[in-house]
Length: 251
Image (cartoon, rainbow, N blue to C red; front, side, top):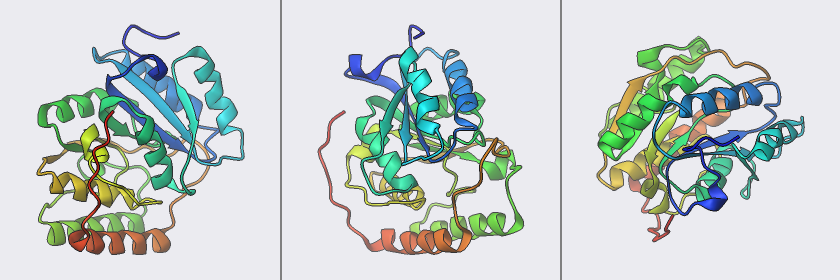
């Protein structure tokens, strides 16, 4: 059942907030995640939509999400780009009609209770907000993943001139035009860097709030330390010199 502020995106030309959740084989966690997101959004006054992007799942994830879609509280779409988190997020952003876009994982590691804080901070700045694990803590970090995050975040600051605590976390909120003003190309996790670089290109603020990362509720991590580490490194360097195509897309 829809609340008075959680809207079906087919019936609106513009909303305040779009929450985009990419999922790949997250049948064991996505239901709990959606319950928490829906409950958290009920506490705010803004009009909202929830878009779940199925990234070619094979474990019943789409069927689980479709139960919520039939109730009208969630929109389920299939990724229209090549497989990967970046492509799935871009598929969701393409259809999102919220002024504020929020990206979060479907494995339960990102706490939905932090959504109101992210939205409030993003509305205050009009830029991009990161839910920082450095400030909030993480139950998921291994030593190598923690080291990699610190290293790449430091490199991003050195190369792009904006020092942050947690550039790589996939729990972010940002103004819709940060996405719609540029042509995006990232297929994987490196979309985190592309978003940050484009935010700086527009002269917008990047701020952070503390957020505790929990242990994923089911399944296994999809990121690969070495493979995705090289992608992050290349993207950090490449975005310094790349001139992305400017677009005039409207919501």
